[in-house]
View 1 (cartoon, rainbow, N blue to C red):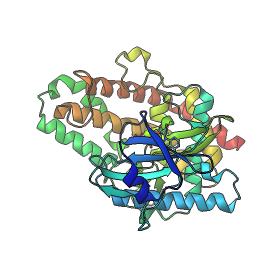
View 2: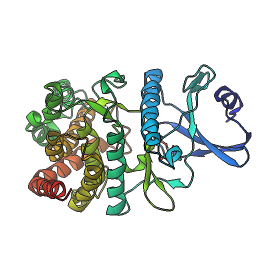
View 3: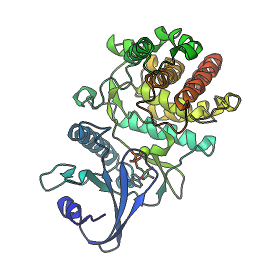
View 4: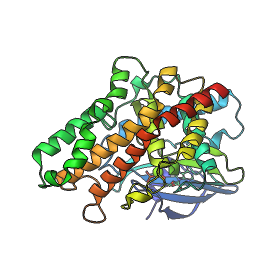
Length: 365
Ligand SMILES: Nc1ncnc2c1ncn2[C@@H]1O[C@H](COP(=O)(O)OP(=O)(O)O)[C@@H](O)[C@H]1O
Ligand SMILES: [Mg+2]
């Protein structure tokens, strides 16, 4: 890959030494560029997947304003390490945070050195730290006017709409699979009423619209190599207006399932209450002054709804003939559906325990 034109367009200072592709991400193509400018300097150059993100300019406008807002907050409190605690995007000669050419839609930002990401949760401490990182993100953005951001993926967590799409998939029965998954269909539809709770709470004003990250997986937190403390939240492509409960609920969904989303052996799926406690503690410690009581009370419901949302999405895709999610084997979307159903079942059984943990943390705080 020749980066000469992009380096010039972003006006990156210093002598270009070379690049390497970072392979961890799924969506975008990520490179690390090495420069020498009175010392080693590294930048991330990333090509956005514009098949997935169809409004790249609006997406970059969202990211730019949100990162600038966090940067201001860090400056106000005189944070010494501020340049490592929020992504810093480079601007092209027209002052825009991207370059679009025949090779694609590119953005460049400072590489955070002496930092690492986890692909899987190593221990409950790192999940606690992830809770702190996503909580800090919410806290910094508590006064950001969320309604000025573009909804770059419409209806992303609109669970009412996700249920409508499932109904459609059942009715159309495109792949002729509906009869073989009646049990799964019944399980999900029996919970249809609960699916709408967050959407309705937002619409009625019971809970506020906020800036949400919308991809709160552990591998989107950068940790400091020395202190192991969380530095910043990355992968901001899905930053949109939404509910803090989406971020919280999806982190719990994705992080507390000890077997992972693709596990076929149901007996290995375990909703880990200790991990739940750790993330919740980290999230609440950092958001205590910014979240409303109503939001906190809905935490267990949010974890269940985000899991139910994925059940509905996987099953709808299975019924459609596997058009959306990449599958690695036949029946993969059904395996994922059953996996999430089992997780949800366990979450339902553990709801009183979750509520007790939250009450306990709030009392101590
Ligand atoms: N500013 C950064 N500093 C250091 N590493 C980064 C930075 N941004 C991304 N990375 C690394 O690149 C990987 C992919 O980046 P990410 O923005 O999460 O892309 P994707 O959408 O493909 O997941 C991350 O998991 C992380 O290891
Ligand atoms: Mg990522």
